[in-house]
Length: 275
Image 1 (cartoon, rainbow, N blue to C red):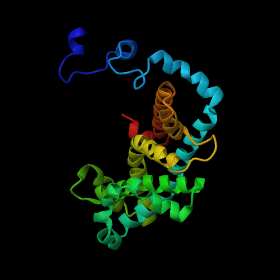
Image 2 (image 1 turned 90 degrees about the horizontal axis):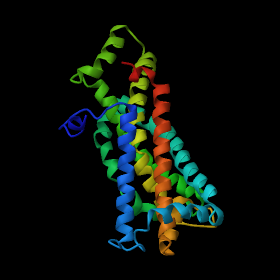
Image 3 (image 1 turned 135 degrees about the vertical axis):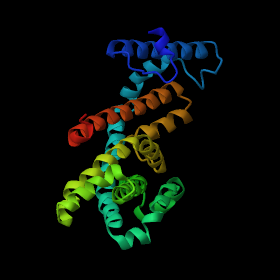
Image 4 (image 1 turned 90 degrees about the vertical axis):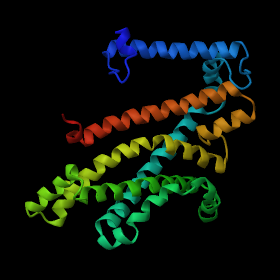
């Protein structure tokens, strides 16, 4: 087994028990290394606090900083914007890709949307929506949508590309059967696009939480301002254990959402995961 562990390009599946043991050992090595670096001031503790201090700081975060309410603020903001982005992006994406004129007119340039520097245009959102919670929602919704719309357009273009034999065969088959446009959309376009875009939506979680932090920092009012805003506050107050605790917390939330979304994708698109 030891030889297989270090085999170039080898399989990393050694069974659930062995995989779990190796992962736990890896975590312990990281924690021991972290403790060693902090305890010996290789990196000053005012920058990198000791692991135990980070863990113990959750108590004060919970009792003094409305931790649960701030967690819900961040999660609600993220999920709400995902929902709005999906509701906006899918009609726009399908309309552009399924209309030959729009596909030629704008479809080839839609990928450029992904390079929009959203953080640089926050002032524009403030001028339109003010400083209310709705501004944060629309900022994040647009930020997520500019990634989803090109993905939808590209997926449809791939499906309609005759050179893409692997996927185009579905469209050719249903056309041979004499399907109507609605039947093509219902049985080929919609399931194909949604099942593939679902992976991109899950992959966007990391990016979306980066934007969540930006949105939370735009305007802070009261004690319930989100985890990202709390991290910024703790760093400014030199409370590094609390800042690191919140950082790991937001990573854990993202990981949990990723796990739930992957499970949900398998329920919604079982045909994609059947061997």
